[in-house]
Image (tube, rainbow, N blue to C red):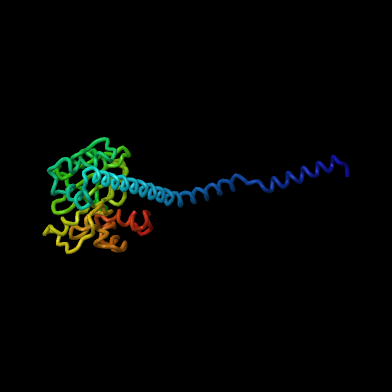
Length: 265
């Protein structure tokens, strides 16, 4: 066989293989359609996982910032946790310094006395509990609240509750998000042991040490994680869409700073 014929034969074989391996337009469209369906099915879960991780990161960052601010404030004024948590409670609400002491260490860009009008702007989505009820009464006394907008964009509200220690609300993404407890608003309890044991309205017979606890106020003016030390109880008693969600921060901390599948996301 001549060399030229051999070359032509090899080229023809190569062309046949290429043609056999090529996709028709119909096959390409079917493949793209399948890929589109797969992406449509998987993207929501991918986005949800990203949102969960971003939320936990922001929550952990703000919790760390508040804890550090409390420690620095205690060092500045020479108080231990028992003294400081009482100092920053409703029992001392007429002393402006008691509530403004944290402002110095939280990189505050502005303050707000009325949480709905000033902190969340009075427009958009009003802050709500997990069950949909409004977080704050619109007619509530402004003197019971002190709000701060941080340079990170977060909103931090310190609430003086009569008969209780102070509750801290943290909206990790400010007014632009869901504005829902358990989703982007989380509660912490600046707990004072002597108040819980001394107030007749609390009916507490025992209490943990004074300090900052994730989650809001459980029964008897006590931290959620002390009243219900098991995660399953916190999910049933508070962190679900039929309840207020005030214990959801405690659930996330119990799960090692993760939002697990049983969390009411």
